[in-house]
Image 1 (cartoon, rainbow, N blue to C red):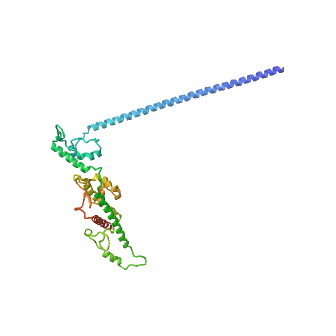
Image 2: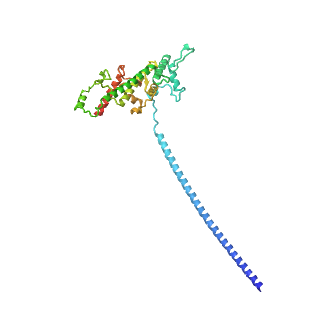
Image 3: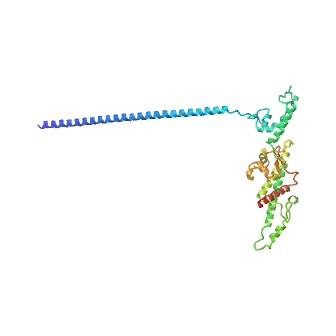
Length: 350
């Protein structure tokens, strides 16, 4: 009996376990079906979204096409309007009418080679061994005259790359620098003598007024000795830093135009062209002429500061002397600067 009961209990346990397994399997099957249904729903949603996206892209594409068609229509209309406008009439300037040849974009030789050799250009002659010389554009005389004018113009507008300052220039400039140093020392000495009396000494009443009355109103260009115009006062006694700078500029530019004409040894090179002033100034004085240091922007404006000594000629635009006659000495430039200083002071006091 005990064995039978034990067998029945084991059989019941097996049945219960099988029932549990069956229930678990059924639950898994149900969950799998639910997941499949949810997956199908998600796929359906994605398909719907994809369809909507495709429809949106189609709409955007159609909009772009419509806009492009509108732009094309506007462009076609604008082109039609432009076609209706009359074409502008082309007119040549007077300078262009004088040209026989089209100006080349690139030169066949460098500027340095051209500037070094153009003064040797000449018209070919039969004596050089030619059997025949034909002048296509102009006859022989006109061709020679044309070349002569071209060379003369080139001598004015081109620069001499290998020009070397002469000993004459070096001597003149050295004399000016030495004199300037002596003048500045004289000015310091004069100003020192004008200082107030030492401490403890009182000035007599009205002494300054009497000294001011005694000060002479000197005619600048009648002064014979610039070191003493009266009472030991030099003509440059009131010079400031700016006056010394303008005095130096005035003399340097006047000496430069004079030295250039002597050093080139060619009467056809009548002066320094305005486009090459900075080049020759640097070549002669071994320093740069910076217009900004004088509050100016161009070399022409710098020259205008000392127009009583030098200027650019109106026709050829070359640097020339503005003096009616050769200066007697360095004192002439001091007198010109003193005159300018007094005019400047009058404008300040006005």
